[in-house]
Amino acid sequence: MSDYGNAFTLMRDAAQGPWREYTRHAFVEGLKDGTLPRNAFLHYLRQDYVFLTHFSRAWALAVVKAQTHEEMQVAAATVNGLMHEEMMLHVGVCEAEGISREELMATPERPENLAYTRFVLESGYSGDYLNLLAALLPCVIGYAEIGARLAQEATSETYRPWIDTYAGDQYQSYCHDIGALMDGALVRRLGPDYATLPVWADLCKTFEMATQLEVKFWQMGLTP
Image (tube, rainbow, N blue to C red):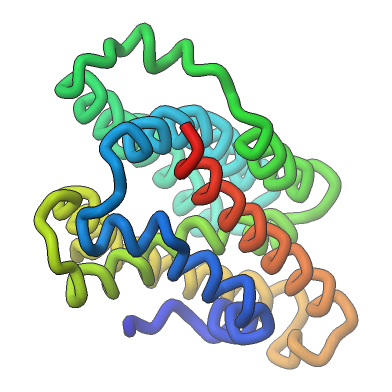
């Protein structure tokens, strides 16, 4: 497994139960063996398009919360990547399945989607850059872990394009950079012993809650 940074590893290990539920959810395993119904996948993609709209806003908020030029650059580049690459991939897949861009953009937001995205945004509105990153990390790096594992274990080619997107060098490199960004941001603001401070427990709670909301997002995908 690739190295996504010290802080991420500590947060993931502190949320082992929810993290396993998230990264090995039945939805994920259906991607691996090709048994995930196509209508469930398309339902997920439509909701994920809505999710990415709000996720882009959260990363734009990270530009505002940043302290350094590097922190601003990474956040701004992420917004660009989400809006001009990942969301457009969703558009392309849905159009190939007969779902027009207009129909995709008009997708009603499910309550599970709303709960997750607003939690992430609220973490940024009420907290600082660290709070926001702690809420963002489970989605960003979780998909990298899932993609890397499924690339090795997949027994079906049905969802190979989705798997390859998140297992690919470009996405993996991006997640490595995000992990390093979190490490640097923590040391810059709290010092090298950040994991011994009371605020660290709060950041881990934010990370764990976002992970639990990821589990609910997968579950939502199974119930079109």
